[in-house]
Image 1: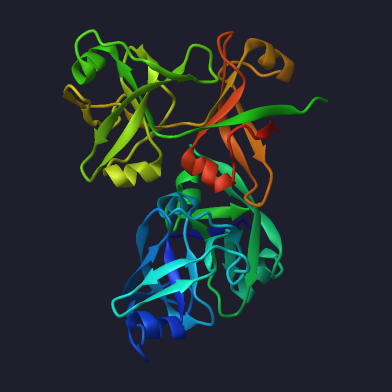
Image 2 (image 1 turned 120 degrees about the vertical axis):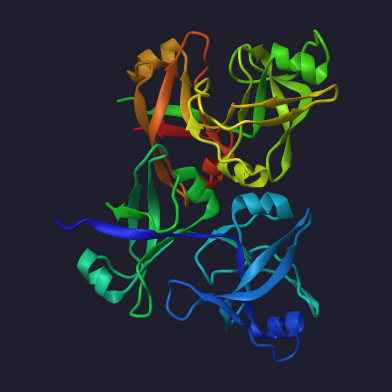
Length: 189
Length: 189
């Protein structure tokens, strides 16, 4: 049987912005500029950064492009302590009843009423990888991490699309807890 | 078969100090004062706090008593980023070749050459619990955490002594990554 290996991508805190919010934060009609491509096709880290302000503090975060339908701020639970915000663990796009905060850019600021989450860990899979690994879209799998902080992540959502590249996304808390670094390969069991 | 349940104790960053270092930081012959008892018999959180200074920053940490043979600074990997220190994952007391830093108290400061670690997760067990759970001192077990961030921690060291109380110790990164809170019961599997 083949080993179902997946490279790790650790997500530091970042924001996705709607064009309406980009207009407020950076100026009407502003277009995000690319800092570097990300491993998921079409996704890129921007040169632009903003401040996210909570009840207790603020954190500077990089914007990821392209613009999305809704702004979404992805932080770790640790970041939440610094901000004074308790982020629910959510799949991307599921923002109902999540906490909001203030977004501050160079040209303006906006108060959002929801959108701050801790992203639920997940695996992006190209359709060909899913076929090879015998995994379906929206299936949950377990992933083993070896080493001194070895553990098995359960409840890992697989998201399959011809526009995805194979990668296991988890946040900095999860990376630190398991001793993982970017690019290390872990195994679906 | 009985369920082998263990209550969780999350360890935030803290320091254990030698009497020699207490003398420097708080004054010759100073005795630590109790803020509150911890769950492990004889161990207590102190009213005293010190600053730990690394290459990039400093963090204020509570002192735990009583005094120990060697000073030991326990931080998370996340704390390590703030300090500019890369803590190795170690069992308590195993400090060889760990990084040092500057300790700053109200009466003085001291440069330590080693002693900063990320504590390896472990279970304290009273001898009676170990017998009931059929676990030996220094045995490694796996622990399942349920819930949306459910996972199985592997390589969990059991430490058995008649002077211990049953408790699974892990750091804040590990607690955030698994969604655990103090006092929640998890299961040895």
